[in-house]
Image 1 (tube, rainbow, N blue to C red):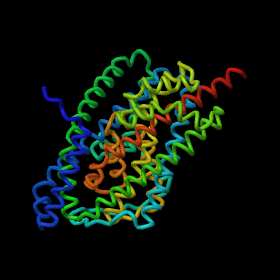
Image 2 (tube, rainbow, N blue to C red):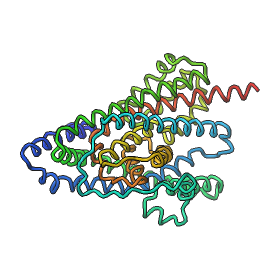
Image 3 (cartoon, one colour):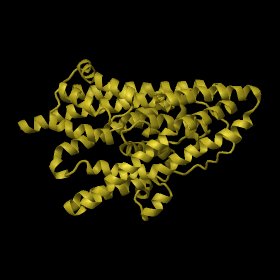
Image 4 (cartoon, rainbow, N blue to C red):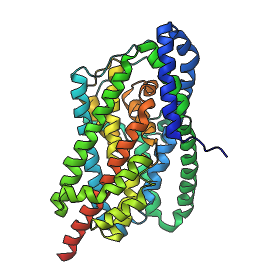
Length: 406
Protein backbone atom coordinates (compact mmCIF):
# COMPACT_ATOMS: atom_id res chain seq x y z
CA UNK A 1 0.00 0.00 0.00
CA UNK A 2 1.37 3.39 -1.00
CA UNK A 3 2.18 5.84 1.77
CA UNK A 4 0.24 9.06 1.42
CA UNK A 5 2.33 12.19 0.86
CA UNK A 6 1.99 14.50 3.89
CA UNK A 7 0.45 17.96 3.49
CA UNK A 8 3.75 19.78 4.26
CA UNK A 9 5.47 17.74 1.54
CA UNK A 10 2.59 18.44 -0.87
CA UNK A 11 2.96 22.17 -0.19
CA UNK A 12 6.74 21.99 -0.67
CA UNK A 13 6.31 20.15 -3.98
CA UNK A 14 3.64 22.65 -5.06
CA UNK A 15 5.97 25.52 -4.11
CA UNK A 16 8.85 24.15 -6.19
CA UNK A 17 6.59 23.30 -9.15
CA UNK A 18 5.00 26.75 -8.98
CA UNK A 19 8.42 28.43 -9.07
CA UNK A 20 9.57 26.25 -11.98
CA UNK A 21 6.38 26.80 -14.01
CA UNK A 22 6.43 30.51 -13.18
CA UNK A 23 10.03 30.93 -14.33
CA UNK A 24 9.33 29.01 -17.54
CA UNK A 25 6.30 31.22 -18.28
CA UNK A 26 8.28 34.36 -17.33
CA UNK A 27 11.15 33.68 -19.74
CA UNK A 28 8.79 32.34 -22.44
CA UNK A 29 6.61 35.43 -22.25
CA UNK A 30 3.54 33.42 -21.22
CA UNK A 31 2.47 35.62 -18.28
CA UNK A 32 -1.09 35.78 -19.62
CA UNK A 33 -1.34 31.99 -19.40
CA UNK A 34 -0.82 32.04 -15.63
CA UNK A 35 -3.09 35.07 -15.20
CA UNK A 36 -5.98 33.64 -17.21
CA UNK A 37 -5.82 29.92 -16.42
CA UNK A 38 -3.85 29.37 -13.17
CA UNK A 39 -4.61 32.39 -11.00
CA UNK A 40 -8.41 31.78 -11.05
CA UNK A 41 -7.87 28.52 -9.12
CA UNK A 42 -5.83 30.46 -6.59
CA UNK A 43 -8.69 32.96 -6.37
CA UNK A 44 -11.06 30.09 -5.54
CA UNK A 45 -8.75 29.07 -2.67
CA UNK A 46 -8.67 32.67 -1.37
CA UNK A 47 -12.47 32.86 -1.59
CA UNK A 48 -12.73 29.72 0.55
CA UNK A 49 -10.40 31.33 3.11
CA UNK A 50 -12.63 34.41 3.23
CA UNK A 51 -15.72 32.18 3.45
CA UNK A 52 -14.46 30.33 6.53
CA UNK A 53 -12.99 33.26 8.49
CA UNK A 54 -16.21 34.34 10.24
CA UNK A 55 -17.37 30.90 11.48
CA UNK A 56 -13.83 29.95 12.57
CA UNK A 57 -13.43 33.10 14.67
CA UNK A 58 -16.96 32.96 16.10
CA UNK A 59 -17.03 29.33 17.20
CA UNK A 60 -13.37 28.95 18.18
CA UNK A 61 -13.62 31.98 20.47
CA UNK A 62 -16.89 30.91 22.09
CA UNK A 63 -15.52 27.38 22.54
CA UNK A 64 -12.34 28.82 24.08
CA UNK A 65 -14.36 30.89 26.55
CA UNK A 66 -16.50 27.89 27.49
CA UNK A 67 -13.35 25.84 28.11
CA UNK A 68 -12.79 28.03 31.18
CA UNK A 69 -15.99 26.42 32.49
CA UNK A 70 -16.66 28.48 35.64
CA UNK A 71 -15.00 31.88 35.84
CA UNK A 72 -15.66 32.06 39.60
CA UNK A 73 -13.99 28.71 40.12
CA UNK A 74 -10.89 29.50 38.10
CA UNK A 75 -10.85 32.92 39.79
CA UNK A 76 -7.48 34.56 40.07
CA UNK A 77 -5.76 31.87 37.97
CA UNK A 78 -7.99 32.69 35.00
CA UNK A 79 -7.50 36.44 35.35
CA UNK A 80 -3.71 36.18 35.66
CA UNK A 81 -3.52 33.80 32.71
CA UNK A 82 -5.64 35.92 30.38
CA UNK A 83 -3.81 39.14 31.37
CA UNK A 84 -0.43 37.48 30.79
CA UNK A 85 -1.49 36.26 27.36
CA UNK A 86 -3.03 39.59 26.35
CA UNK A 87 0.02 41.62 27.44
CA UNK A 88 2.55 39.32 25.76
CA UNK A 89 0.47 39.19 22.57
CA UNK A 90 0.30 42.99 22.41
CA UNK A 91 4.09 43.12 22.91
CA UNK A 92 4.46 40.51 20.15
CA UNK A 93 2.45 42.72 17.79
CA UNK A 94 4.69 45.70 18.54
CA UNK A 95 7.85 43.60 18.00
CA UNK A 96 6.43 42.31 14.71
CA UNK A 97 5.58 45.83 13.51
CA UNK A 98 8.99 47.21 14.56
CA UNK A 99 10.92 44.57 12.60
CA UNK A 100 8.54 44.80 9.64
CA UNK A 101 8.91 48.57 9.44
CA UNK A 102 12.70 48.34 9.79
CA UNK A 103 12.81 45.93 6.85
CA UNK A 104 10.26 47.95 4.90
CA UNK A 105 12.04 51.24 5.64
CA UNK A 106 15.30 49.74 4.42
CA UNK A 107 13.59 48.95 1.12
CA UNK A 108 13.79 45.18 1.63
CA UNK A 109 10.08 44.66 0.93
CA UNK A 110 9.02 45.06 -2.72
CA UNK A 111 6.31 47.05 -4.46
CA UNK A 112 4.66 44.72 -6.96
CA UNK A 113 2.49 45.30 -9.97
CA UNK A 114 -1.03 45.72 -8.58
CA UNK A 115 -2.93 45.84 -11.85
CA UNK A 116 -6.48 44.67 -11.28
CA UNK A 117 -6.33 45.09 -7.50
CA UNK A 118 -8.37 47.90 -6.03
CA UNK A 119 -7.64 49.62 -2.73
CA UNK A 120 -9.24 52.67 -1.22
CA UNK A 121 -7.47 54.16 1.80
CA UNK A 122 -9.67 54.48 4.86
CA UNK A 123 -9.34 57.43 7.19
CA UNK A 124 -8.53 56.71 10.81
CA UNK A 125 -11.14 58.45 12.93
CA UNK A 126 -9.24 58.18 16.21
CA UNK A 127 -9.18 55.65 19.04
CA UNK A 128 -12.67 56.42 20.39
CA UNK A 129 -14.22 56.13 16.94
CA UNK A 130 -12.55 52.75 16.49
CA UNK A 131 -13.70 51.68 19.95
CA UNK A 132 -17.33 52.55 19.19
CA UNK A 133 -17.21 50.85 15.80
CA UNK A 134 -16.24 47.44 17.21
CA UNK A 135 -19.59 47.12 19.01
CA UNK A 136 -22.19 45.83 16.53
CA UNK A 137 -25.70 47.13 16.01
CA UNK A 138 -26.74 44.18 13.85
CA UNK A 139 -25.20 40.75 14.37
CA UNK A 140 -26.07 39.42 10.92
CA UNK A 141 -24.72 42.53 9.25
CA UNK A 142 -21.41 41.99 11.09
CA UNK A 143 -21.29 38.45 9.71
CA UNK A 144 -22.23 39.40 6.14
CA UNK A 145 -19.74 42.29 6.05
CA UNK A 146 -17.04 40.12 7.68
CA UNK A 147 -16.39 42.84 10.27
CA UNK A 148 -14.00 40.76 12.33
CA UNK A 149 -13.64 43.05 15.34
CA UNK A 150 -17.42 42.99 15.74
CA UNK A 151 -17.51 39.20 15.29
CA UNK A 152 -14.97 38.88 18.13
CA UNK A 153 -17.10 41.09 20.40
CA UNK A 154 -20.17 38.98 19.55
CA UNK A 155 -18.24 35.82 20.46
CA UNK A 156 -17.12 37.33 23.77
CA UNK A 157 -20.68 38.32 24.72
CA UNK A 158 -22.22 34.98 23.74
CA UNK A 159 -19.47 32.98 25.44
CA UNK A 160 -19.79 34.97 28.66
CA UNK A 161 -23.59 34.77 28.59
CA UNK A 162 -23.57 30.98 28.12
CA UNK A 163 -21.25 30.67 31.12
CA UNK A 164 -23.48 32.97 33.21
CA UNK A 165 -26.63 31.00 32.31
CA UNK A 166 -25.24 27.87 33.96
CA UNK A 167 -27.06 24.54 33.51
CA UNK A 168 -29.86 26.12 31.49
CA UNK A 169 -27.33 26.78 28.73
CA UNK A 170 -26.15 23.16 28.42
CA UNK A 171 -27.90 22.84 25.06
CA UNK A 172 -26.08 25.96 23.81
CA UNK A 173 -22.78 24.47 25.02
CA UNK A 174 -23.47 21.27 23.09
CA UNK A 175 -24.48 23.22 19.98
CA UNK A 176 -21.30 25.34 20.10
CA UNK A 177 -19.15 22.26 20.65
CA UNK A 178 -20.85 20.43 17.79
CA UNK A 179 -20.61 23.39 15.42
CA UNK A 180 -16.96 23.93 16.31
CA UNK A 181 -16.17 20.29 15.52
CA UNK A 182 -17.76 20.75 12.09
CA UNK A 183 -15.91 24.04 11.55
CA UNK A 184 -12.60 22.36 12.44
CA UNK A 185 -13.26 19.70 9.79
CA UNK A 186 -14.21 22.39 7.27
CA UNK A 187 -11.05 24.31 8.12
CA UNK A 188 -8.99 21.14 7.63
CA UNK A 189 -10.59 20.69 4.22
CA UNK A 190 -9.75 24.25 3.17
CA UNK A 191 -6.18 23.93 4.45
CA UNK A 192 -5.87 20.62 2.55
CA UNK A 193 -6.40 22.62 -0.65
CA UNK A 194 -3.33 24.73 0.14
CA UNK A 195 -1.09 22.96 -2.42
CA UNK A 196 -3.44 24.07 -5.22
CA UNK A 197 -3.41 27.65 -3.98
CA UNK A 198 0.36 27.53 -3.49
CA UNK A 199 1.09 26.19 -6.99
CA UNK A 200 -1.26 28.48 -8.90
CA UNK A 201 -0.39 31.68 -7.03
CA UNK A 202 3.35 30.97 -6.95
CA UNK A 203 3.38 30.28 -10.69
CA UNK A 204 1.38 33.47 -11.34
CA UNK A 205 3.52 35.63 -9.03
CA UNK A 206 6.87 34.42 -10.42
CA UNK A 207 5.63 34.62 -14.04
CA UNK A 208 4.35 38.18 -13.68
CA UNK A 209 6.91 39.59 -11.21
CA UNK A 210 10.05 37.66 -12.13
CA UNK A 211 12.54 35.87 -9.87
CA UNK A 212 13.01 38.92 -7.61
CA UNK A 213 9.92 38.00 -5.56
CA UNK A 214 11.65 34.83 -4.33
CA UNK A 215 14.34 36.85 -2.58
CA UNK A 216 11.64 39.06 -1.04
CA UNK A 217 9.89 36.01 0.47
CA UNK A 218 13.20 34.91 2.02
CA UNK A 219 13.56 38.39 3.55
CA UNK A 220 10.06 38.40 5.03
CA UNK A 221 10.76 34.97 6.56
CA UNK A 222 13.97 36.34 8.09
CA UNK A 223 12.04 39.33 9.46
CA UNK A 224 9.43 37.08 11.13
CA UNK A 225 12.00 34.71 12.65
CA UNK A 226 13.99 37.61 14.10
CA UNK A 227 10.74 38.70 15.77
CA UNK A 228 10.11 35.17 17.07
CA UNK A 229 13.61 34.89 18.60
CA UNK A 230 13.57 38.36 20.18
CA UNK A 231 10.13 37.74 21.69
CA UNK A 232 11.11 34.34 23.12
CA UNK A 233 14.25 35.74 24.76
CA UNK A 234 13.12 39.25 25.73
CA UNK A 235 9.59 38.38 26.90
CA UNK A 236 9.28 34.70 27.84
CA UNK A 237 12.68 33.97 29.36
CA UNK A 238 12.67 37.42 31.00
CA UNK A 239 9.25 36.84 32.60
CA UNK A 240 10.39 33.39 33.83
CA UNK A 241 13.46 35.03 35.36
CA UNK A 242 11.64 38.06 36.80
CA UNK A 243 8.58 36.28 38.21
CA UNK A 244 9.79 32.72 38.86
CA UNK A 245 13.51 33.27 39.45
CA UNK A 246 14.41 30.84 36.65
CA UNK A 247 17.46 31.35 34.45
CA UNK A 248 16.88 31.59 30.68
CA UNK A 249 19.16 28.59 30.13
CA UNK A 250 17.14 26.41 32.52
CA UNK A 251 13.85 27.62 31.01
CA UNK A 252 14.76 26.89 27.39
CA UNK A 253 16.41 23.59 28.34
CA UNK A 254 13.23 22.48 30.15
CA UNK A 255 10.92 23.64 27.37
CA UNK A 256 13.11 22.31 24.54
CA UNK A 257 11.22 19.04 23.94
CA UNK A 258 7.86 20.83 23.54
CA UNK A 259 9.45 23.52 21.36
CA UNK A 260 10.89 20.94 18.95
CA UNK A 261 7.62 18.96 18.82
CA UNK A 262 5.67 22.16 18.12
CA UNK A 263 8.18 23.22 15.46
CA UNK A 264 7.77 19.96 13.55
CA UNK A 265 4.04 19.34 14.13
CA UNK A 266 2.94 23.01 13.72
CA UNK A 267 0.10 22.32 16.15
CA UNK A 268 0.04 23.77 19.67
CA UNK A 269 -2.98 21.58 20.47
CA UNK A 270 -1.14 18.41 19.43
CA UNK A 271 1.86 19.46 21.55
CA UNK A 272 -0.18 19.65 24.79
CA UNK A 273 0.96 16.30 26.30
CA UNK A 274 4.62 17.22 25.79
CA UNK A 275 4.01 20.76 27.07
CA UNK A 276 2.51 19.39 30.30
CA UNK A 277 5.58 17.22 30.91
CA UNK A 278 7.92 20.15 30.29
CA UNK A 279 5.88 22.49 32.51
CA UNK A 280 5.88 19.93 35.34
CA UNK A 281 9.65 19.50 35.00
CA UNK A 282 10.08 23.27 35.30
CA UNK A 283 8.00 23.38 38.50
CA UNK A 284 4.50 24.31 37.33
CA UNK A 285 1.72 22.87 39.52
CA UNK A 286 -0.35 20.17 37.82
CA UNK A 287 -3.74 21.83 38.30
CA UNK A 288 -2.49 25.21 37.09
CA UNK A 289 -0.72 23.68 34.09
CA UNK A 290 -3.88 21.66 33.30
CA UNK A 291 -5.79 24.96 33.08
CA UNK A 292 -3.19 27.27 31.51
CA UNK A 293 -1.83 25.00 28.75
CA UNK A 294 -5.13 24.00 27.06
CA UNK A 295 -6.35 27.59 27.33
CA UNK A 296 -3.05 28.81 25.95
CA UNK A 297 -3.32 26.51 22.94
CA UNK A 298 -6.53 28.40 22.11
CA UNK A 299 -5.86 32.03 23.04
CA UNK A 300 -2.07 32.43 23.33
CA UNK A 301 -0.87 33.01 19.78
CA UNK A 302 2.06 35.42 20.06
CA UNK A 303 3.86 33.80 17.13
CA UNK A 304 0.72 34.17 15.06
CA UNK A 305 0.47 37.84 16.09
CA UNK A 306 4.07 38.54 14.98
CA UNK A 307 3.43 36.69 11.71
CA UNK A 308 0.25 38.67 11.06
CA UNK A 309 1.96 42.01 11.66
CA UNK A 310 5.01 41.19 9.51
CA UNK A 311 2.84 39.70 6.75
CA UNK A 312 0.44 42.66 6.82
CA UNK A 313 3.23 45.24 6.38
CA UNK A 314 4.83 43.05 3.69
CA UNK A 315 1.58 42.62 1.74
CA UNK A 316 0.71 46.31 2.14
CA UNK A 317 4.15 47.10 0.66
CA UNK A 318 3.51 44.63 -2.17
CA UNK A 319 0.27 46.49 -2.92
CA UNK A 320 2.06 49.86 -2.80
CA UNK A 321 0.20 50.88 0.37
CA UNK A 322 1.85 52.88 3.16
CA UNK A 323 0.31 52.11 6.53
CA UNK A 324 -0.26 55.11 8.79
CA UNK A 325 0.32 55.10 12.56
CA UNK A 326 -3.46 54.90 13.03
CA UNK A 327 -3.70 51.86 10.78
CA UNK A 328 -0.83 50.21 12.67
CA UNK A 329 -2.80 50.70 15.89
CA UNK A 330 -5.65 48.85 14.18
CA UNK A 331 -3.18 46.11 13.19
CA UNK A 332 -2.08 45.70 16.84
CA UNK A 333 -5.68 45.59 18.13
CA UNK A 334 -6.93 43.31 15.36
CA UNK A 335 -3.92 40.98 15.43
CA UNK A 336 -4.11 40.70 19.24
CA UNK A 337 -7.80 39.82 19.18
CA UNK A 338 -7.43 37.68 16.04
CA UNK A 339 -4.66 35.63 17.63
CA UNK A 340 -7.05 34.80 20.48
CA UNK A 341 -9.48 33.41 17.93
CA UNK A 342 -6.87 31.31 16.14
CA UNK A 343 -7.43 27.59 16.57
CA UNK A 344 -4.39 25.61 17.75
CA UNK A 345 -4.08 23.61 14.53
CA UNK A 346 -1.62 23.72 11.66
CA UNK A 347 -2.26 26.42 9.06
CA UNK A 348 -4.92 28.32 11.03
CA UNK A 349 -2.77 31.46 11.21
CA UNK A 350 -3.12 31.88 7.47
CA UNK A 351 -6.90 32.08 7.85
CA UNK A 352 -6.53 34.70 10.58
CA UNK A 353 -4.24 36.77 8.34
CA UNK A 354 -7.17 37.15 5.96
CA UNK A 355 -9.08 38.66 8.87
CA UNK A 356 -6.41 41.29 9.59
CA UNK A 357 -6.21 42.23 5.91
CA UNK A 358 -10.00 42.59 5.81
CA UNK A 359 -9.88 44.95 8.81
CA UNK A 360 -7.43 47.25 6.98
CA UNK A 361 -9.08 47.01 3.58
CA UNK A 362 -6.01 45.43 1.94
CA UNK A 363 -7.07 43.07 -0.90
CA UNK A 364 -7.18 39.56 0.58
CA UNK A 365 -6.06 38.21 -2.79
CA UNK A 366 -2.52 39.29 -1.86
CA UNK A 367 -2.44 36.53 0.73
CA UNK A 368 -1.56 34.31 -2.23
CA UNK A 369 1.89 35.93 -2.30
CA UNK A 370 2.74 34.58 1.12
CA UNK A 371 0.68 31.38 1.38
CA UNK A 372 3.37 29.46 -0.49
CA UNK A 373 5.79 29.74 2.43
CA UNK A 374 3.17 29.70 5.20
CA UNK A 375 4.39 26.33 6.46
CA UNK A 376 7.82 27.85 7.18
CA UNK A 377 6.17 30.71 9.11
CA UNK A 378 3.90 28.20 10.87
CA UNK A 379 6.79 26.14 12.27
CA UNK A 380 8.36 29.13 14.01
CA UNK A 381 5.16 30.73 15.25
CA UNK A 382 3.81 27.47 16.72
CA UNK A 383 7.10 26.88 18.51
CA UNK A 384 6.86 30.39 20.00
CA UNK A 385 3.21 29.90 21.01
CA UNK A 386 3.97 26.71 22.95
CA UNK A 387 6.97 28.33 24.64
CA UNK A 388 4.66 31.11 25.84
CA UNK A 389 2.14 28.61 27.25
CA UNK A 390 4.88 26.97 29.36
CA UNK A 391 6.24 30.34 30.53
CA UNK A 392 2.75 31.42 31.62
CA UNK A 393 2.13 28.21 33.61
CA UNK A 394 5.41 28.76 35.49
CA UNK A 395 4.67 32.43 36.23
CA UNK A 396 1.07 31.79 37.36
CA UNK A 397 2.27 28.95 39.63
CA UNK A 398 4.72 31.35 41.28
CA UNK A 399 2.10 34.10 41.65
CA UNK A 400 -0.43 31.73 43.18
CA UNK A 401 2.25 30.33 45.51
CA UNK A 402 3.00 33.81 46.83
CA UNK A 403 -0.72 34.49 47.28
CA UNK A 404 -1.13 31.24 49.25
CA UNK A 405 1.78 32.14 51.55
CA UNK A 406 0.21 35.53 52.31
